[in-house]
Image (cartoon, rainbow, N blue to C red; front, side, top):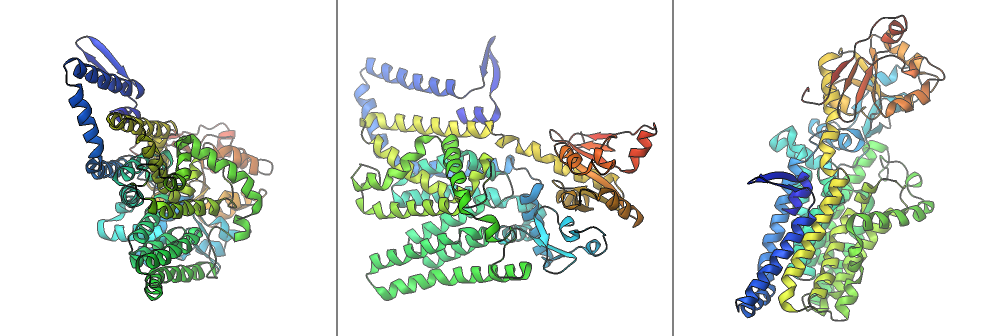
Amino acid sequence: MATVVVVGGGFTASFGGVLLRVHRPWPLLGAALLAAAAAGLAAARSGGLASLLCDARAAWTARGRAAPWIAASAAVAVLVVGLCWSTWSVGGADSYGYVSQAMLWLKGLTIEPQPLAAHVPWPLADWSLSPLGYRPATGPGAIVPTYPPGLPLSMAAAATIAGPSAVFWIVPLAGAAAVWLTFLLGRRLAHDTCGAAAAVLLAASPVFLYQLVQPMSDVPVTAWWLGAVLCVAIGRPALAGTCAAAAVLTRPNLAPLAVWLSAGVAVRSFRHTRSLSRSVRALTAFAVPLSVGTGFLLWVNNHWYGTPFGSGYGSPRELFALAHVPINITRYPRWLLETQTPVVVAGLLAPAAVWFGWPDAAGGARGRGPAMLFALGFIALVFGSYLPYSPFDEWWYLRFLLPGLPLLLILTSAVLLGLAERIPAWLRVPVVALALTALATHYVATARDRQVFELHDLETRYVAAGRYVARYLPTGAVLLSVQESGSLRLYGGRTTIRFDYLDPQGLDTAVQYLQQAGYQPYFALEAWEETQFRDRFSRASGLGRLDWPPVAEVGHPVKVRFYDPRDRQRFLDGDTVKTFKELNASGR
């Protein structure tokens, strides 16, 4: 109920003239604690305290029976949240890049011609006709995707089976799988209760929820890596290699994790069989599907970028630098502590806790210490892979570290449950349940405060803008935009030109050329982009001042405005320019 209050923003109800307002979760948790205390006091007065304590001890002993059901409930909840709060829309670089590439795979054509690029008179023509999520192909007059093919191929498969809207199912399904895999891996590394606790904490994690509701690769790549780690742990090297291949296709820069897993395959096989030949066979079983996936990725890269080791993001020198390390080494840990609380630091102590024999930290098995060290190494590799990467200043770029977060939560849960073993047995169930509920509720509250559950409304502007273009603008319209450059192609079916690749002196030239060539140019700008547009063009062009009313304003709360350059002179001459207004994609 506390979590429901957090997500829904609370409720107000009247009972017999008494008005009840609940808008924060903590009074509910406090009430639950008081109710438990009252029940204990009532039992003591009635002489049933011994029985109550016995039941509490028995509940702790039998806690493993409920663990799968708790984890399954968390997985189902994640699926529901992912489907109900999904943006169900495409906009910006990432979501447009992934979804539109999926549509290209369905067509069997991943190099998209841009005939207009061969005729326009301005420099960087190919770049100006590359919407967000795309870049010029190696040959002139065409564009190719920026993003790797793993997630788009999954989306294309879903769309083939269940229709185009199924592209939005992949991330919620991957989220539910990630939660369940966290439970299975936690059970393997420690015990059932640890797996269930980690699954609940992952399901409530702010950055996990933030990415769960968007058609992006962070949650799917997390699920693939979790599947690979689990298969290594249970001795399924071929399946582990298949999952690792899918993960590399989805996020190639984390390929070093596959090397770490291959070492885990070899060590585990040798420890269990004491046979070098069987270890080699296990390593081969892991390497074959990984090599096939990697080979396909190299072929795609060569096809798109002209070199097997190319990338749509740019060269390694552009993306990675030692100068980035001091920035990222402060930002990522700070974001982690802000969103996951300092409790997660306890996970770093899990191998030591097992080594020194903390009860229940690993199901009483000191032999699981090496497995926890392996998990810690995996986390360190994920973190280290992004330290030299280009820095970002938004908290949700913590998403890059998502593949390591479930393992960190597993280790954290193992340590905290080990601490629970040090309190009286009859207190363990209520203390663990209350602590887990409080922490998960705090996570969800943090997610709500950081607009996770508002993303659907924020993203509807892309659909609203696209539908306006499709309904009201002529088929020959060409839209100068940046943020909307992809979504207007998808939803509006019109050509877009990136104004950030036009020369600051060349706006008038571009508009005049398009008009003379039979096109009708418009400026399609989100409200926050208007300042950038003016700063870029207003010194050399009157059109760059945007000093006349837009022909349309759509979207809410982020507004998208459409300016017709033909209206400027007419407005300055005293004519009225009417602005069509539509708030959202539903037409209201």
